[in-house]
Length: 424
Image 1: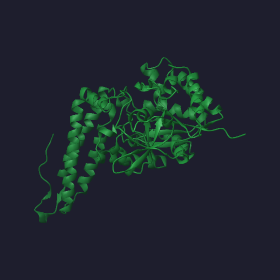
Image 2 (image 1 turned 60 degrees about the vertical axis):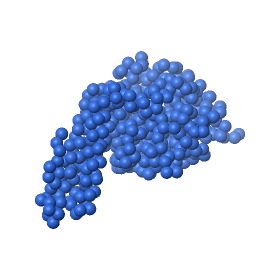
Image 3 (image 1 turned 180 degrees about the vertical axis):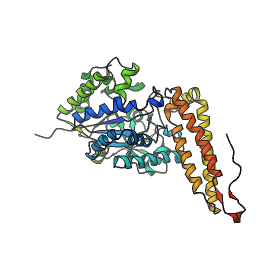
Image 4 (image 1 turned 135 degrees about the vertical axis):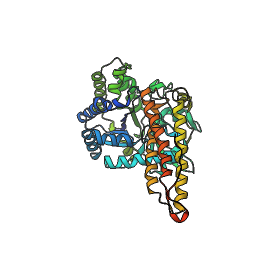
């Protein structure tokens, strides 16, 4: 008897700290009440593999404050049950950053993730599902092999238009700037998942978890996808925030209790484990087995929360909810760029710029923290916006202080340090 065609199934959970419904002092609850229990479920289903998306700031915070959790996740990575997917340093909307800032965020997160988890990430996922060819090139230049995107983006924004929905279950290459490409995998979102109107997947994974659809809908969806899996190369990629099991009952987004949501997830896992044709995989392992054969241009797109609006969803939210914060972030970015130029010139003139570089590094760190998406368009809490604004202001101050720390040699007429310097 011929071997049955395999349907490859992968999960991707975001380890999220800057929740839109919590002030900063309560972010730790995400790990304690939801992400930790999620690992308990995986311990009971050790055949199942999963990706976890983690940004550098979150990974470092975990290593310093939740070392037991880090050991558990690192153990799964070492066993090749888990794969770490790179996120922005701290939840920035990456396609609203210039190339150099995007590249800096990517590299910082990659370095920290490699140090903490023991493996350098090869994939990336950015909040809001942003696609643009400049940010994608920053990923390529940073050594990232693939990016996770949403299936509705491939369906609606390809050039030439996509005429086969089955393509969303396979990898593809997308064209970036400078004649480069990046491999991409597409999350199997379904109708009305976080605002998506198109019926591009029959799975309804998010609605099944939240109790809005019965688990049988998910089971039938898997069977439908397998029916058209003629080559045995399809990937079902299931996505959610790891905090969802606590967040949705806590905020009233579901009528289920956390235990009921977790039970639903375990029922899904048990069903998949019993399917003779299901093969669990991580994203990188799937790509090794089935590299992309199709290449597309993809129109810049972001935010499934308002499909069709593109970047307007973020720009409009930033204008209405965090206008001054964005002004301050823009000023801090300008101050940092000016300081970078001053330091380069001073270095060519023989000045001692090492103290200034150290201060500027702190300014860059603060700027990254100020640009977290939750502080602006995505249902921000006032406490989070204030947290971001304080880091933006600090970034400006540190950049200007860095200029004052430059020490010129006496033969240039300097008296040690630069004089003056603006204050806010």
